[in-house]
Image 1 (cartoon, rainbow, N blue to C red):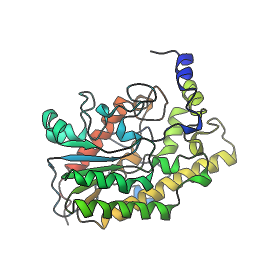
Image 2: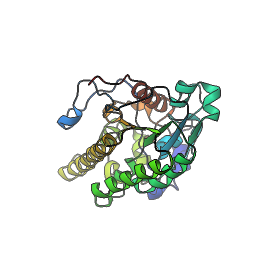
Image 3: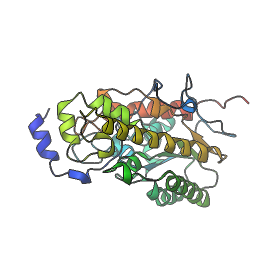
Length: 300
């Protein structure tokens, strides 16, 4: 294991350009006390969808650094083999592996996510995913829209909605019947509260990671509290957009807030940046996705 000094040295050039994504995910999620009533269900369930096939035979993934496995294997590097959606790592058992088996997953899954991307980049990813003619497309994006240098720079909700709607249109132009699994954006405020107990993690955050939420991690003054609450409220609004847009598509299923509600621990965070998911975090995301994708059709 690297010493704290070595880890900081390796990360010292990241600065404000550090790639964002969020570090959390998993199964058995608890519900946040401060979540709005729409998200405080006793047991989050996927959005009802007609004609849903719980055993798709191919998977394409779109999104950001979470789906690329960034910082899960080595510092400042993508590690798609541990991706929750399409990875091949035995310890993670990605959604593709759980659905297709290891051998078929290697040939019938594609990862078009891009580290650092925001919702505005999703239409182009959807175009590439549609070209594969997948039976299922996984979507996990939005953390970078909230993780900016300041609250003022966060993506407006209306722009977030417009880009997601454009993404769905792009997919439907090339793959009209592909199923879509949409993950909620993780709770970035829980990331702050979980990681702030780690001194090395706070030093790494100080290099420029997700400053809208993580700047001055020990500051509990009114301004810092209001800033973090504003970021969390924006994430909640993004998730409402994901839910609403997905509900209008016949073949789309939203996770019901399962990723947002998951009470991840430090074990699910990368030891390189205390921000992105570790291998264990990726495995928890795979569990959530598999549970939602294979859930039976809710009764009418």
